[in-house]
Length: 230
Image 1 (cartoon, rainbow, N blue to C red):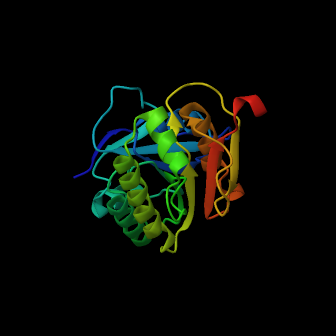
Image 2: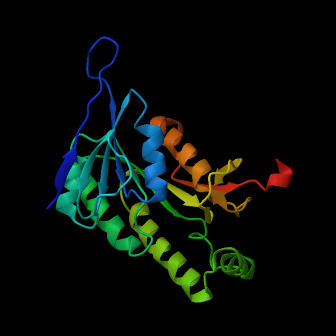
């Protein structure tokens, strides 16, 4: 059962309600950083859905505690929502995607930004990427293989839907506050850049949420330009 913990609203300069309602599913590091950027915008109201309360400040949002694999919990969270940004599904991506597509269809919400992994369209993981995953992030070959396979399965559910979706196919995350110059390109191409910081990615995604009509692509590859080439 979903539970409500805080609610806010915003007025425009004429004292009339005028806002875009945004649902962020998952308030881990990336979800929270996107929340911090979007929630301060006067034209937006943010609702957060996660399975437990966090210690960090979410006072500018409506915080909902619920199960993102539960269609009923998702449907309650989706009422009145214009745009959904989901950053759940590190594991069991297919389960999360299946529930979300069903809930969005039943409620009638269409716009979805879904984070996934940059290798989901590759026929196989290259040795260079296995080496990078192990060297920089400590991922074994098995962990990386299973992760990409899970992300492919989740993305396949989104692709098969009739939602107005954009898959954000992100390179490996760097959990730093450094500023990266990002490369946003067609997912039909091989990735051009390398790992990207959460700080930079959250800034880009916030713009995508706020101006989602400017990002009509079904799939976008996102990586960081090497520092030496900036």
